[in-house]
Length: 271
Image (cartoon, rainbow, N blue to C red; front, side, top):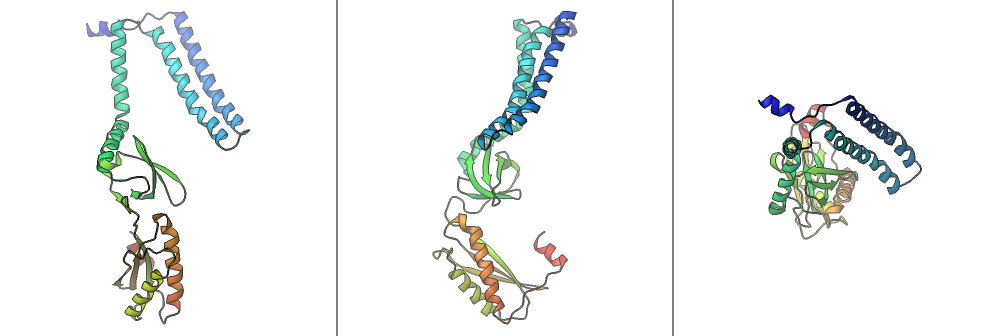
């Protein structure tokens, strides 16, 4: 009985219907193939945003053609009754819901992000090794720009499973850490005061925030971390470069030498 109900959904397909279905499939394939060949050629005649707009039409044309073909073919195969339409829509809704479960999860996580505020525009965040400034927060994903000027879209669903590191958390203060590796035979207090002076004389330093030098003795030498805050988080890379360059120059003027790390020790510092 169930088999009969299932088969009653479909029409008796004759040769004319088969021919029409075949023509629709062939025409759809031809249109998609032509769009994939002709639109890139057309895009080569444009520049800037116009070229990108034409290239973006390729997947759009493909989706539109596929949807039109499906809408055309379905009435040729299925009896267009109210009961059949309800069954088809229900099955399609179930399939679409399963396919879009990750999208829905990201949208729900986006709503949670509005309440918990793990990141805001202007924050510098790191998610699974990707570090950058938050430029836009959408319903599905957060858009960040990396230091290499690459735009990365991170789905909000990462809230459920990944650690999200926020360097400034909505404020103007972002700590920068410059590392120095020295041979152990030196005056540690002298190096500490020198590195503090290097940070104090930087044009990027935020004087209202503390400047800290932390040292740690290792088998290969002494590891110094110079911690300070730039005036603006966007200056963090210029600030680190300034601290590193001037710090090395000042340390060379002292009777100290830099440590030579073996590959094993380098791997321990960068696991």
